[in-house]
Image (tube, rainbow, N blue to C red; front, top):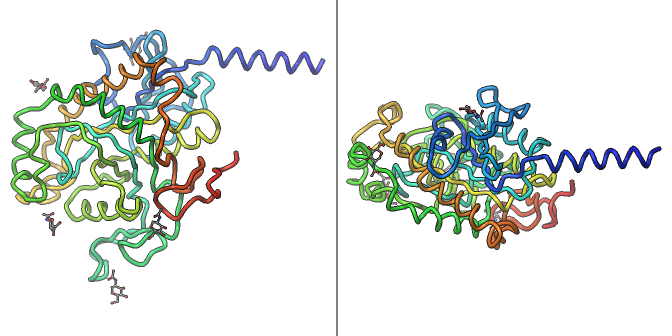
Length: 373
Ligand SMILES: *[C@@H]1O[C@H](CO)[C@@H](O)[C@H](O)[C@H]1NC(C)=O
Ligand SMILES: *[C@@H]1O[C@H](CO)[C@@H](O)[C@H](O)[C@H]1NC(C)=O
Ligand SMILES: *[C@@H]1O[C@H](CO)[C@@H](O)[C@H](O)[C@H]1NC(C)=O
Ligand SMILES: *[C@@H]1O[C@H](CO)[C@@H](O)[C@H](O)[C@H]1NC(C)=O
Ligand SMILES: *[C@@H]1O[C@H](CO)[C@@H](O)[C@H](O)[C@H]1NC(C)=O
């Protein structure tokens, strides 16, 4: 009797697992424009199969897939809470088996003109949760503070946080990042650019520190910073450059700015701990839509509220560069990707939850062995 019941349960489990969609690539977008960059493209039809997943954003209740389910797309909704909730929902959904799936975060972002320019497509090794800090209003800060933001548990900017929540820094597989970068590079000469973008770069390119902002769009290796607050300005840009340095022990490059990636990575880390995803199969791609600070000819508010000529270009370039990564993974699945691209760097969070010793922060909370779940 009991044996029969467990046999029945086991076969139901196997059955539902085998019906689950197991994409080779899951494209993770945050809002409509990023998502529609992948609609009506020549390479594949991501709208051939729609799967309603209970618990996703009411604005984006369906995961879109190609007919064979090899490529799918999640639209998380914007901001940290939407990203965390949507990614978590999908990761734990019985409708999907994401254990060997590659995650391609494909979003637009602000960009630091010291590193690159609008239209560029970047691949990050670190996602730094720069918004996770103490903050006092700039009008009330001590005279000798360079910014109102300072790490939790500290007494001033520039100190390492003594209170950690766990999402301060995520590090992804650098070998996979290099593979994705090389694939995207094959489309570098086709990246979109416009006369309006060229004009917008001019006042930056004239500044000694911002010469990188004067270049044409390229494919770049540099890191990303997350905050729910949509920040803009030279002072806050420099403050978060500092935060990125402190949180990553000066190994990360503050380059792109966005509102979700630390949240998405935290949800994927939880999924990895539950055996639902492989955290070494994540690619963090962000294309630059606007500068994170004004040129010297403009004030911060004008720059924030002004036109963003890089917006349509960054959306086009998500697809132009990103589709090379998607096609590369699908076409070289057996040879290169099915068994995984082995990471040789530390991969995971600041707590060492997945095992290994983080190469930033105070060390593993779990003696290098990872959390037992
Ligand atoms: C999937 O949903 C999109 C709209 O989100 C729609 O355009 C498309 O036709 C749908 N596909 C199918 C097969 O119903
Ligand atoms: C700022 O000044 C106060 C006292 O005047 C001092 O205790 C503190 O260390 C200074 N902080 C920084 C960041 O220099
Ligand atoms: C960029 O896209 C715009 C809008 O589709 C187009 O007019 C322009 O020619 C494109 N530029 C390049 C360099 O492809
Ligand atoms: C340019 O860089 C120098 C040295 O790194 C720094 O002192 C200066 O404030 C920077 N200027 C701007 C506009 O960022
Ligand atoms: C990172 O910097 C902090 C603060 O200086 C230090 O305590 C920690 O040991 C450093 N971690 C690594 C991996 O170097």
